[in-house]
Image 1: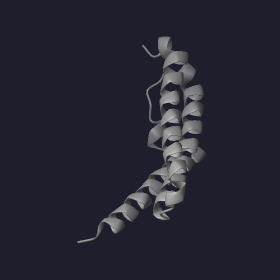
Image 2: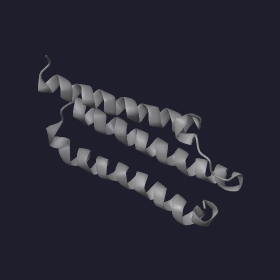
Image 3: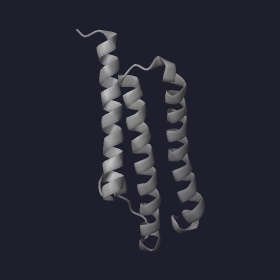
Image 4: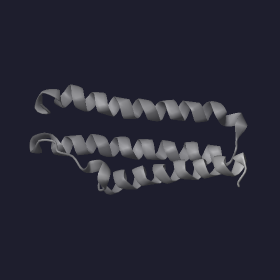
Length: 106
């Protein structure tokens, strides 16, 4: 059985992999994050918002995973800040889509 350090490294690698997936999906404008049933008149603008959020969150997750993998304890403040920023980007994207297109989504 592995020790806790190897599990921590595995989680850091997994975080970077998820970040890479988000970044590639956003950069290529393809992938399962774009599978949606939005009306045709708003689909392009919603895809654009999701694309930007995917690229930003992907880069943030890669940075967080890298900081975890390198075990940079003196940069723990940055790690927490990046997690908070990534969460705000995700929540902001959802709120933006709901507020801007709420009437068209019903």
